[in-house]
Length: 154
Image (tube, rainbow, N blue to C red; front, side):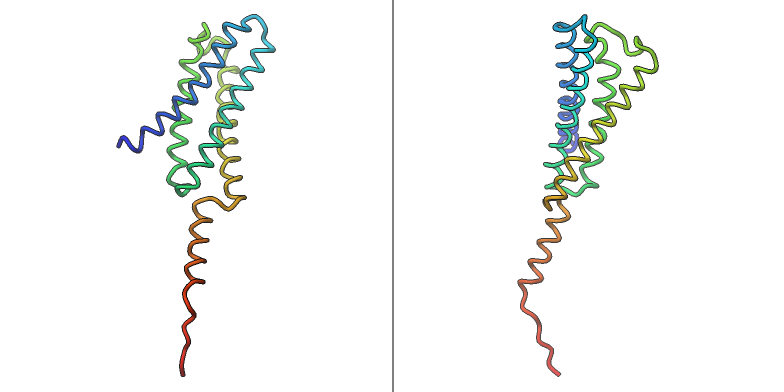
């Protein structure tokens, strides 16, 4: 059980830590400048996308997509819930302080950057032919070519 859920929890913690760092930097460094806050928020989403691209690249080499994609989705969902409901308290606000529009836009942005990052990571992996399926097909082709051809006598 621990082997399965520990990586999920660590990934969720890393994604939430990225959010915590972005919120604390904007709170203590640029509290009065909304433009810098927007840039820091965008940088946070880009870093989350990059982290998930790396995770998709690394996990896609070792395991089939069906095995690791659910774990990554659970980690992203947990990190998104923490980011949306716990994160605002770190910056001295509340989850619904900006209204429903800001709340749902944060959900859509998080989902878009997380999904986009994981998709880019897996597509790069597949384009290089390093994913689990491509490697399995490569091993199969090598073993079938390594066997000598059977001669059929009549």
